[in-house]
Image 1: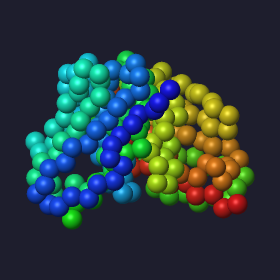
Image 2 (image 1 turned 30 degrees about the horizontal axis):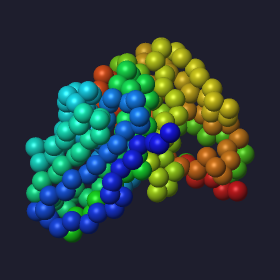
Image 3 (image 1 turned 180 degrees about the vertical axis):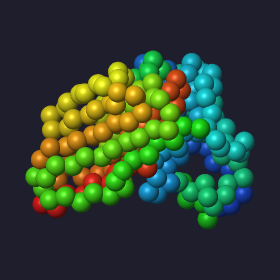
Length: 112
Length: 109
């Protein structure tokens, strides 16, 4: 059974540009969460989606948005990129019933 | 908002020594989860604790959840080089995890 897949694995963008990151959850998992991890820190919660509805949003600006599709895959969009958006973006899937999360390998975003 | 603190930030041990990391929350937690992240890798789920005073074991790893559900610990007995990585605790709620900064464990063979 495939794990959580994220694409792309690495990305370099210029300040002011837009980026779309993609995630496919484990089959059968209806919940997808997005986390941002900067070097030396723990992951920071951005969004959670369950059954295509936003369940929660972290303390991130409106430049960050996300959605979940009928097949439970998800996209994270970031507009007007800043240097400080450089980080590892992690997608995590779960059943949505309060169990542990399975993280993908992440997308390493570098903004120059 | 909820804050989760972990100590120590770093721990270097000789192979065979024990290791403990501690986690404290500013608020009562509904559950706590522990993750391990190898260098260059992604967090991997280890365990979830839900009940006050709960203790769970996984081979050489022992996890505890405090009576007040505001603190937790992870103890590794007789560390091995394969234990190297950053151990994170994360307070769980209905829809999000609040991670601590983690404890980086290095093991000298």
